[in-house]
Length: 270
Image 1 (cartoon, one colour):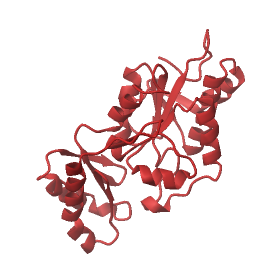
Image 2 (cartoon, helix red, strand yellow):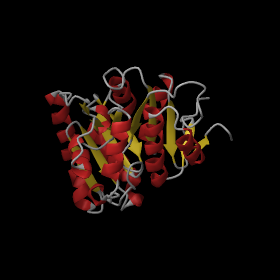
Image 3 (cartoon, one colour):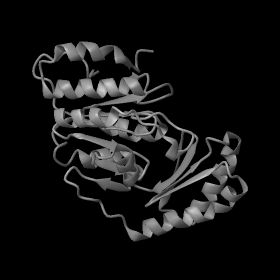
Image 4 (tube, one colour):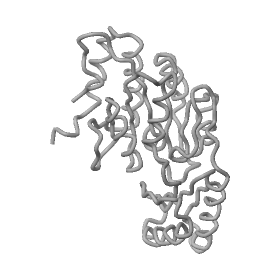
């Protein structure tokens, strides 16, 4: 199977790199607003963008505005709300149907009584999606699932997706895989080899599409996955991102390849 750190016989492939945000570029926090970002991350991403000729994008369950706030002053290509929102590399924004936004608001309103009774729960309304976080009250997982199931019952255009201590309602037909595929049909991603790095069950769609397109999925941490490679932690993601970008920019960067190889493990080796 392909290995993104293997030394190529010919010129290194041009890469398009995509990552999740929470749990991948940054550590997962107790609440969505409590994320602590490495002070070096914006500069690291700026360097990676330069080396990749801007073929880098974040694909996340968060809203685009959240990513802009955390990564300021960067203004990256981003797919937010699992692809229900998308900003292309040229700055074009995918316009979401107003009915989808209205349905998301209705779903958030429907679960409001559960939150009122359980202050430890957190609702994250988005433009086109809703996330119900129970990280601070894991014993309420079943109650959260039931409430979200009831909330989407009147909105068949939405699908429930479980994540790490979160249940999300997103529009059917949108997922991280469809967002990656859309990016790959545009400049500067078109014609490149896609690599997607993520940590959660919602990233499996993007692993699948990246590998269907001849690239590689890289899962951070333990758990079943279809990704072909695995990486240990967020710090390793940062190092790998810079290394892969350097490889793509300088085909003869054998030293960088050798340094990055130990970061990855083959998920099919056991």
